[in-house]
Length: 288
Length: 347
Image (cartoon, rainbow over all chains, first blue to last red; front, side):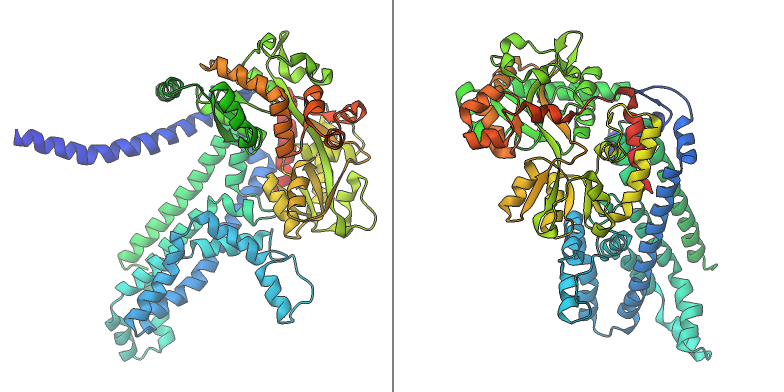
């Protein structure tokens, strides 16, 4: 009786999450994969097994172009986030003497996550616009005398917005990685005659790499799949993969092609995740 | 897959029966304003039918929403370039025009359109119409623009906006002198695509929703664009932004939205009451006052509009209506058009 009850409890604890994953993740993936082999025929599409959709993706230059642009934007966002987040996290962990101040600064970075993503992206329109806050400021201090339209509706605006939105995902893992590094290691390095820069380069940075890899992966994948920034602050040259997929499912009513695009995107993201996973494990094993 | 669809259908069926039992409620999937409380509340009082409205942002929303699950919506209002698709997808049912009082008052031009008929039966009830006009900011021009070519003027670099829709191909084709915009050859589409690519560096933003275009003018980002005649200019006027609509020398597209009854609706009685109301003075002036669109029943319009509004909406101006290149279903050419437009945006 007790045994049965325990088994039942075990089955529930494990079974419900498994069912959830099967129902809401594996099944949809399966559906998307299936669709990607179907064929578009007016008015909709019909079941088939053919590689025409994938072929289109690699032969029609428009898809490659958008893919490269999306990779570029995602890389730039990850890089900008890294350049801003690393020094900040470093300061918090090693230089900030007051624990209270450290908590406050850390929370200041995390807090925007509690505000709707859409709202945060939208706000950048009012900052970067022709009659926006940035232009008013630059004009009031006399740097420019005409409002400039170079800040909004282009790829620059997209990178700024996405960096702002996703930077907490870079700060958090780097902060955690740096925090885990025992202070006596840098002290030992200094005792052995290393200057602060060389200690950083040979001790701190390698030990924090798993955090950097995790941050890169998170920010890269999040911006790689972004749909809203191109819509809100992107310009005519701002179409990203997610927008193209949305068009195929909506306007073009070509779910098979949209599914093939989604699968290609999934493969890209999964390869990045597995690469970063390998890097993290290598870091954890101390083999960098 | 199949089981999944069945389960979904089952759940939706249960939901829709639930609402049907709860009273006579009709669910409409429509454009903002077409089911506005300013006139719908009166209908609800008079008919005892409750109306639930869900809004679409684009004609592309109808098919995916109906594909995702039948049995939710009773009535839809796609535009005349999308109505045929709804019929071909088997999403809508033929109308019993005998049950619609003002049917014969509708402009004959609309009743002659292929997009709302199949095998001698009507599937759509013409409701409102208008032009895809062009619009400019008064303060930005000393000589008012008159041509589509003005949207290719390098002096307006960074101040131009164009609707993010296959309609942009229609615009570019007319600029190229190809007036058969719904029947373009592959070469003509390629030429339109090239023209749009040439224009692209001048474009500030392709607008996707009415609200977005209004914001672009309000924030001083753009000074010229195409527009849904009457709608965005009305919203801008309310904000104190002075814009003027114009029909370019190359002509303008016309659109017309029709009410269609979703196949298998359990609420037929309320659906027809609703259709009758929408084609009567209550519905026709109701929507004209909210959205600033012209309406399909000129008799009702004459009765409920002021002479000024009646004239401003071109209700007694057959020449105006005839001058519009009313949207047509593109059928299997649809893909060529959307693909060309997507290629422009991808560059």
